[in-house]
Image (cartoon, rainbow, N blue to C red; front, side, top):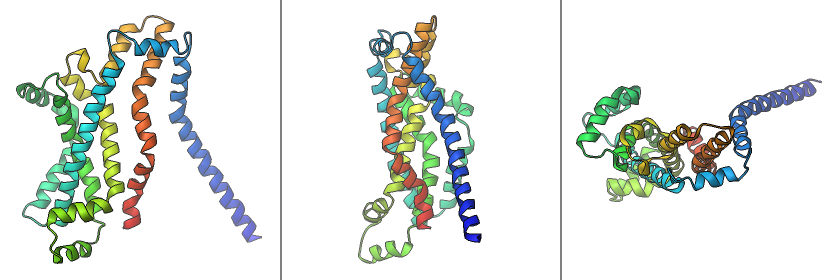
Length: 272
């Protein structure tokens, strides 16, 4: 009798869990479904054709701009933070805790609070309306969080493994790319994907830096398209179409890399 009650209780718990998950999934998916449906109203695929052939904003150029910014930022952030995390986690040097604490303190500073000095710095460097003017700030803003993630993961790797490599004569850099990097692939992939998505979706930095329409990333192009064509029900359908097309690359990246995100999120707990 007790076993039956326990089984019924477990079934109810599982059903309740799935119900809650379905509700949250619906909250996230429903707006996307509505956008897709709305994008096909009136002209169907003609709305997408209109966006792809829009004369003022070139869709493929916009995607190229965002890809350049997001991929470069993701690769550089991942490389820098993986090296820095190795130093802070496995190497002892004077002031390491102070430096690491100062870097993490940057997480408390919102981007909006440094827009004025950021704009002045980018302008003085001659990087206004240039991809590097967006890439460099995005690297700086994303690096502290990614450093925290990789450093915490590196802390779970036993020091005894690295000591044996040092006894065999391996240099610190060799230990990093022969031992640390292969053992940390899930977290490194996690950082790479997250930085890509954050850089792709960033709006404030491109708004400060970019001036010409040919250099617009997707976030600025979306705003330009909406302000230029919001006049009729047909234009509304085209706006939904452009939203879907501009978001599609990042959605595909997320879906393809989802297993890396899950593995990176759980890897520290598994190793700990």
